[in-house]
Structures are given as structure tokens and as C-alpha cells.
Image (cartoon, rainbow, N blue to C red; front, side, top):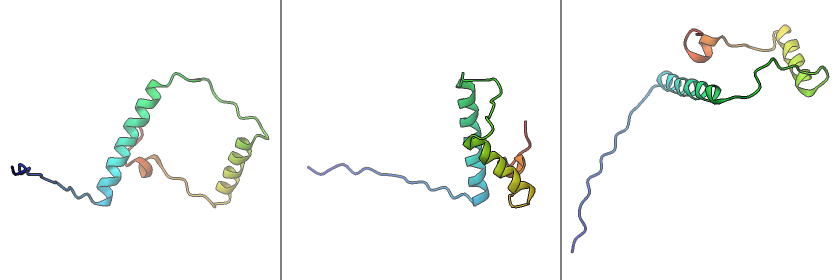
Length: 84
């Protein structure tokens, strides 16, 4: 007895890089928003102790920014829209 023939259809959608970036940004925004809504963690301001590794890293970032060695991106450059 012969095996039944099964027709398969494959659909490929082509996106240009800008379209793909917008899709990724949209998904990330949705996932971050959902995660933050579900998070019931600490909501008070965080105090970073001077001398801690995180404090030292933040001070280094601040110094490099003052020296013009860093490029900070705007909300619009990162997400492709204006902040809410």
C-alpha cells in the first residue's frame, strides 16, 4: 500500500533590517512591560554603597562620559519612538 501524499506549504517573509529592528523592539517592550507588571520586588530607591564594585563602575562610566569617551543613545534612537 502506498503512503499518502502530504502537501506542505512553506511561506517565507522577508523583512528589511529596519522592519526587523522594529519587530524586535516591540517584542522587547512587551516582555519588559509584562515582567515589570509581574514583579513585586523592592520598590524603594536603591542605595549604592560608595566603594562597592557597582559604585566604582558607575563612577568610571561617569568619568568616561565627561571625557567624551562614551556615546549615550536617546530613547528614540534605542526604541524608535518617543518616551511614554
